[in-house]
Image 1 (cartoon, rainbow, N blue to C red):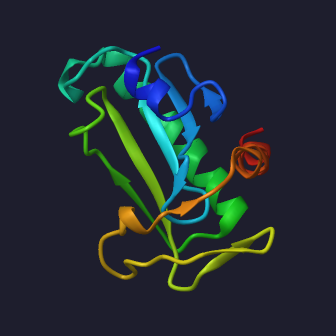
Image 2 (image 1 turned 120 degrees about the vertical axis):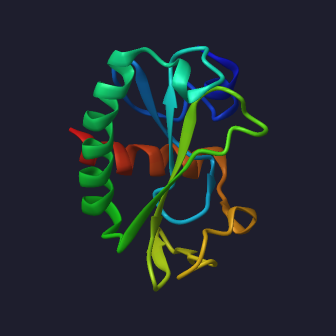
Length: 142
């Protein structure tokens, strides 16, 4: 696996694996259910991914949107490709909501609504909480 995937906690954060992509729970939860869609490739430019990865990305996006809607009933969804600190091709997937979502007594506000997501305002969870959240989200991918 590439360094970006490892930085986002693989294998502990793995929710779903595709041939060319991994869906990971984002350790810093910008909003409830924030994910990372990471290419397995070592490519550091999106254009360098194999053609098959682009075709499969459509399947991954459909699975993500269906599963996240079932989990947290988001109103909008943002895909952010930043690749400044973590260079391998990946997207931050941020489900957006006009009102805070709650899970296990923890509030997850969308600090940037209706503007850009505020990545610095992410909720930090313990490793045990992350594992429970990963499992709760992953159920919707099956």
